[in-house]
Length: 272
Image (cartoon, rainbow, N blue to C red; front, side, top):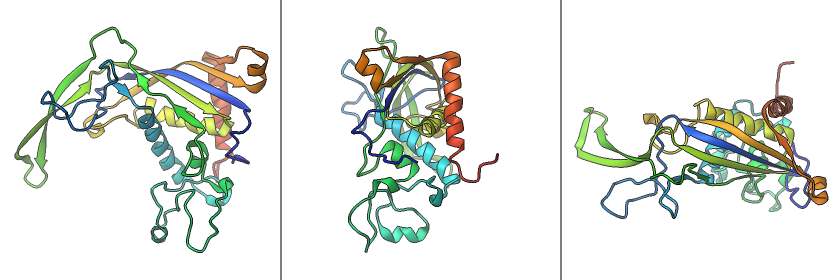
């Protein structure tokens, strides 16, 4: 557990991770209701008309994945636990859900002790605590070519009769399989166990257990991830004008093992 999760007043270190997301199946990140008659469900595009993945979407998927993993081994007395960030009403506590970090129970003092934040809120932030992790929008790598957009058909199904419901047909856009996006992640004052948890989260995406975008139950959003550049900064390096340490290949693998070991030491009831 971080002794003081709100330690942003002092820079101890920074990490910048750069990688490439390669989609094995099509991707759909919806832009909301269509503004014209070209398609019913368009994909999100930037100002140049290229599809992109919002950093907030990637971070949200990563957080929800890790929340489910941490809850499986959650033990609040040890400091390794996950609240439910959507639970803000005390009457839901009866259902066994932990009150969202930064929300007060009736009769409790109004002040919030940020040191009591759950494991995930210490990393990704809460209503009263900033996040240690920042994910940039993932832009498409090949910006010189025509955007790889495909149009697919969909129908509304009557679940009881197992036929098309009322003839309701629609179409939606997808980014073609094989498309690559640049991923960039920044971590402020990272702790080894924190990086271990993030590493596992990104592994879940790379291994296909976690998907990105919509229509995932139809097989969309499956991606692989390859880290191309990991830089580690310290305050001393920055002040002295020295280059940051680059973690690649074997060096990165060694550091990732250290991060995973630090995380394993925090998990309650771990086996020796």
